[in-house]
Image (cartoon, rainbow, N blue to C red; front, side, top):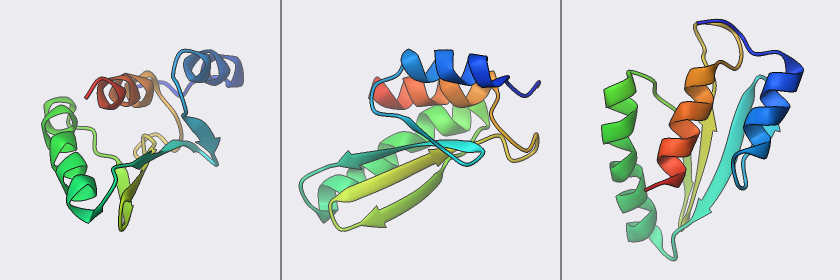
Length: 91
């Protein structure tokens, strides 16, 4: 899959709520009220990530899950990253 240009990345971010660039990735924090909510949210990410064979990096801090998405194999952002971000937002 081809890496996106800066203008394509900006357009992709404009179509998403709360996602921000983070180096060669996009990132968003999801607050879920407590630790159980955070873990349940992480569990909900399994199906879309597995279906796409595209897996985000996750960081959990009590009630907050930080999701970082990048196409590691390509060394940056691809259309698949924005597709997965949209699927996560739809959960």
